Amino acid sequence: MTATTAAPRPVRLINYLAYGANDVLGAGAMAVISAWVLVFYTQFCGLSASQAALIFATARILDAIASPLIGHVSDGFGRTRLGRRFGRRRFFILAAIPLLPSFALMWLPGMGFVYYLVSYVLFELVYALVIIPYETLAAEMGSDYPTKAKFAGFRILFAQGSAVLAGFLPLWLIEWLGRDSADTFFYMGVVFAGLFMLAAGGLYLFSWERAAVAAPEPAPGSPLAGLYRNLASTLRIRAFRLHLGLYLGAYISQDVFNAAFTFFVIFALAGSTQIASGLLGTMYIVQFVAVLIAIQVALRAGPAAAYRVAAASFALGVVTLLVQWTLGIPVTSALIWLGIGLVGLGRGALNYIPWATYNYMADIDEIVTGKRREGSFAGVMTFVRKATQAVAVAGVGLLMDAGGFVPKAAVQSAGAVHTLAAILGVGTLCVLAAGVLISLRFRLGPQSHAVLMREIDHLRAGGRTPTSPQSRQIVEDLSGWRYDQLWGNNPVGK
Image: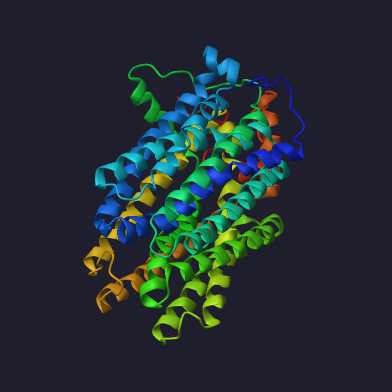
């Protein structure tokens, strides 16, 4: 396949499937890591919760630095010989495929702190080589709202399918290998590494990039300074700032929940690793169904309203789990399934909505700058996500240690259990509340996006005044700039 196309190409089912399947890597890896890495390090490798959190945080911070660089480089990579041959985005995906087995190396039992730190950092960098270009491709292959919404829908459906596997696979392996076998996680890593390679290969074969458009020129002076000026300029787009708030509210709340949930089941509800695995798998099945519902609700009521409904469901599920613990109701009770169901319904929708809106950010940026900077936006998304996720999960580990958590212990103290419950409840609910408050100011939807695209065509054709007062209001609300400052008449991206 060629790297770019001179005219729009029809998007077929195979393209949607190939695009969506790559989130087996994007979301699948994160589902496995967020649910199991602290358990693996503390319960099977003997690391303290603080050591495990330090590994996670260090890898995330290094990746948060590398990811914007990859996005920035990919925006201008089409000017190189390799970029012209393999694609300015898709070259990085191709290069990363033989490195994806590094995921399995993270889960080798019996190693020390330094090994787990290095192997985790290595995988995070390989992950970024695929995910940053991947996050640009929906905007590259699609231009209208429904097409981009379908890309987001296929992506999140595959993401939830991989999360189901992340939940149930340890349970199946435990039944096969035995409850105390650390090899459970290594074999899980091998299975997922194989799936990652297949998904990335399919994405490369069945994706493309739009014909070359105005790309950011290298900034004068220090390349590194130019990089961060360009990335920081994405935050001058109002809708993108609000989008980041929605995204972090949805995903960081899940990071906190995931990091604490397995421990909460084992030590607060007196369950086991097998029970926690089955509950996670069930929750992810519900999330899969919730995505199908969220697609329809977001198209009809708008993404912001759907976000608030989803957050309320997630919060109610968390409260249900805390009530079960407070009342001493056993983990085998039917009440836990109500809590898991509500959590799954909310999380599935919260996974879909931010990615559905993300696909339109480069369009809003284009009306401000007159350029296409998908890679820069993908880099900033990953930078902010990884940096805040590092803080969230590291914070969970540090709080667990402060609360008296003891690695490899079969029973934890009352103080440690109360700390786990507080993390699961207060931590999750506070982050969700922040996302809901931001959603009240977010007004991107199918109608406003259609107006945006008409105004882009109008400006591209030489127009300088808005086509209507309503169009002016919509575009200025989304962009955060006056109409006369649009289409490059501003310092953004320069």
